[in-house]
Length: 200
Image (cartoon, rainbow, N blue to C red; front, side):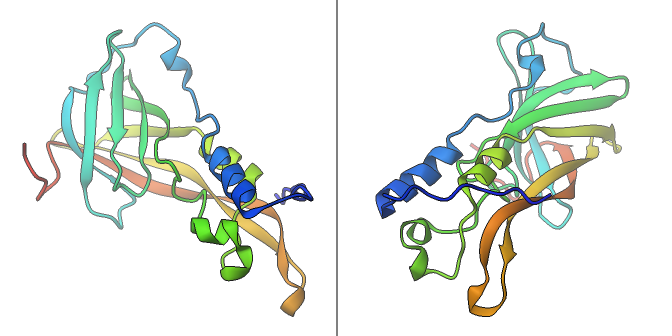
């Protein structure tokens, strides 16, 4: 669905544009309800794991830990296609993950360099509207992980990627509003460090 966006303020400057854009990325991330409820146990053991977001990528670092209240937390480290952290709970033989984005500028929420925000005429890159960034970084991340043999788990995560919507033709073509398209990524979780990872 096309979402219209307001025009920038009349007194816009490069510094104001960049600060407004960075502020959009500092907007609140998803907050799972499980963080406010009594801890529910999970069979997933704390320690280092290898994980993959999208079957097209190699295994990278993940970590499972227990917080002071007994919740099980799983973090997909930076270097994964999508950096995220969340709560894991048991659902019969399955694991349920609900989390939030952890990177400053997550995948699918931006694609322009800072210089393009400050001086749009210097780039062929059109930045996403602030409202799109706010909506993107706030999206919840949910995965049902199913046993996949030898202590491994696999699931599929729906994830919204945000794009500008364009109107007009030729030299009159310009961004006006934005759209979000849902993609689905295979998530793999494997006990132990990924192959080739440095050991402390």
